[in-house]
Image 1 (cartoon, protein in one colour):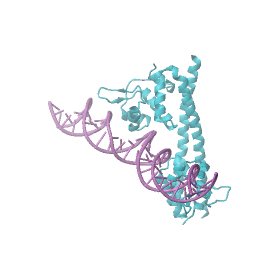
Image 2 (tube, each protein chain N blue to C red):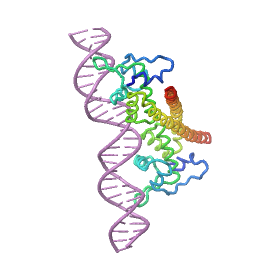
Image 3 (cartoon, each protein chain N blue to C red):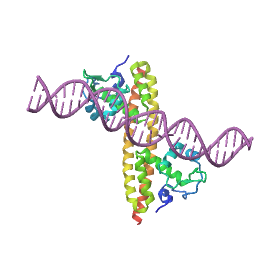
Length: 141
Length: 141
DNA sequence: ATAAATCTTAGAGTAGCTCTAAGTCAATGT
DNA sequence: ACATTGACTTAGAGCTACTCTAAGATTTAT
């Protein structure tokens, strides 16, 4: 069994990983720029396996949880579904034996993001072509 | 009042614009790589203002419609909502007087796509950092 | 101690597809 | 000529990932 630190330590380059509960959902939301709704939604879906709650049931995010949130956002934005993220979380909680499988998941996402960048560049070109056309049209009047 | 050609001619760089109805929804879908469902959905939403139907009510896409579909896809992928696309379509059908407004819409989308590319690059970096970490971990075993 | 702020949950609402079902129509085989 | 096939139509249901709302609990400020 593995802990939060193992899951996210690759994200903490310079700072030692801090798992002490510190931030309310509102504070966390502001720090990671993800809506409170989404943070709660992700937690409800089990995507914060190490998130703590105080006696009153309030969520308390640590620095490590914030880093983890950033990874979730990255995976989601690159097209991973909630279900697939749940699977990834599960693999993380199982432990080191799942590293190769986790590697494959991220490798696949890496390719997807690369393709997305290519697509975005195409979109940009198309928009700029139209803008250029409109600009010329305006000058010709 | 403006026609289909005006709306999409900036997209037809080398080829003369062809507005003759040619392709069924299935054929069009394959050509532009957008699902039949989505093409019908966009048409139902009024996003193909010049799309023709034959006597039996079947949609017939011209080359110009295919180019237009590509633009719709681009706008959608860059984050424009259906409502905003409907507005853009409306401006196109009104005519030349709306070119400045259309320009502003596309200019805004250009900025958005540029930001999206930056975001994607950040995501890629994060994934590659994790991949690198996993790789090192595997070798260390 | 009362009011305001901040949190909780369950569940409804939304956007943009995505799919299904039931029916229409043209082309082809017998 | 007529049935079958297959590609199309529509209306509307279903899905995903949020996004918001309402009702209630707890903390904080006066």
